[in-house]
Length: 482
Ligand code: FAD
Ligand code: MLT
Ligand code: ZN
Image (cartoon, rainbow, N blue to C red):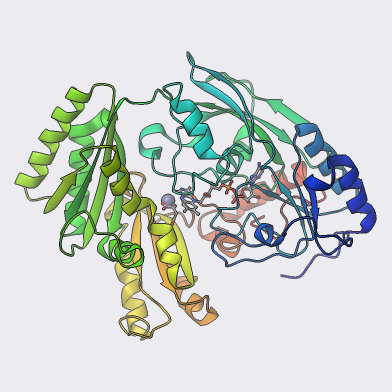
C-alpha cells in the first residue's frame, strides 16, 4: 500500500488548531512542533507488534462536541484519522498505516446512567470493559460481553469490532444487546440515538452499521446496552478429553443437561495448554497430556439447583467416558485459576515473537480439522517438529459454543515465507466449508485482501456505497478493509 496523496500532510497550523481546541495535554504531538508532550509510540503499534504506523499526532477528546469539531476540521482539511480505543484489536485496525491522526477515546470514560429495572447501561465509549463490569457488579448486573483483554479494551472498541468473547453463547452478540449509540460522522454531524428501547421498528437500524464497523464510518462516543442480571451461583469445571469426537459429545450433553445455566463452553487443544504451562510455569489443573481440554461455566440464580444439575452432568460424562478427567472449582480463587488457563492463551502464544492468528467460523463437525490439515501442510514443508524451526507450533482453541475456532501459529518472528504457506490456504479451506474468515476479530488491515472469501461482489459493492455515503472524503480509518 502507498500513502494516498489526496490526504494532507499535518502542518504546524493544524496542530495549533487542535491544541487550542483540546489543550496541549489532550493533543499529543511528536515530530511536528518542538516538544514531544508524551511518548507517541504506544499509539502507533498494535497489540501483536505486527503493525506500526507513523502518526505524529494523538488527540484525546473529552466530549462528543470535541469529537465533532475534530472530525469536521479533518474532513474539511483532508486529514485522515484512525479511531482508537484500548488498542487491543488483533487485526491491525486500531493503528495508523501511515501518518493518520489517532483519535483516542480514553478520556471519554464516564458511566452516564444505569437503570436497575430495565438493566440498561449508558456509558461513554472510552469506558474500559472491566470498569463497566465492576460497576455493574455493584448493581447485581453483568456486562453481556467478557474477554481476555477486558482490563484495557474499551466498550466503544468492543462495539466497533462487534467483539464476541467468552459469554456470547449465553448472552448473544452485541448486535442484539446494544440498544443505541451516539456517534459522530466525518462531517461533524452527531447521531444521537442512545435509545433504551429493546423494540424499535422504525426503518433501517442504522446503529448496526457501527457495530462491527471498525471505525470506517464514524466515531462512537456513547453506547447504551442491555445488561443481564448477574448470576449469584457461578461454577467452573475443566475437563480433559481424548478426541474431537468426545468434545462434540460433551458439548451436546452440556447443552442438553445444563441448558439454561450454561454460560461458556471453551475449547483448548492440548498444545495450547502445554504452551500456557511452558510459558507461565504454572501447574496445570489436570495431570498428564491430553489432546483436548474444555472449560465449562454455569451461571444461575439458585446454587443448589445448579450444583445438582452440574453434578448429574459430571457423573454422566465421566461414566460414559466422554470425558477422561476433570476438576470442578471449589471457590472463587480456583474459578479464576481455571479461567486463566483459557484467558492467558493469547498472551502466551506471543511469547516467541509473534503469532499468525486466524479467527474462523466453521461448522462444528469440521471445525478442528483445519488445525490437523495445517499441521500436515507445515510438516510437509519441513517447518514443524524441529527444535530450531521458525514455527513453534500450530494450535487451535476457541469458542466451541459459537462454532468459532482460533487457529494460531506462534512463530519466532513474522516472516513472509511462512505467511505465504498460510495465506490464502487457510481462507480457501474456510470458503470450501462456507465458513467465515473472521468470526469476531474483524478485518482491519490483516484480513483486508481476503474479504472476498466470505462476502460476494454484490455485498462488497453495497458496503462501498455505504462507506461513500457516510464518509465521502474517505478520511475514516483509510487503507483498512474498505
Ligand atoms: P481498538 O483495538 O482500539 O480498536 C479496534 C477497532 O475499532 C479499530 O478498527 C478502531 O479504529 C475501532 N474503534 C475503536 N474505538 C472506536 C470508537 N469509539 N469508534 C469507532 N471506532 C472505534 N475479541 C473478541 O471478539 N473476542 C475475544 O475473546 C477477544 N479476546 C481478546 C483477548 C486478548 C488478550 C486481546 C489482546 C484481544 C482480544 N480480542 C477479542 C480482540 C478484540 O477485538 C478487542 O480486545 C476489543 O474488542 C477491541 O477493543 P479496543 O478498545 O482495544 O479497540
Ligand atoms: C480469544 O478467544 O482468546 C480471543 O479471541 C483472542 C485470541 O484469538 O487469541
Ligand atoms: Zn476469541
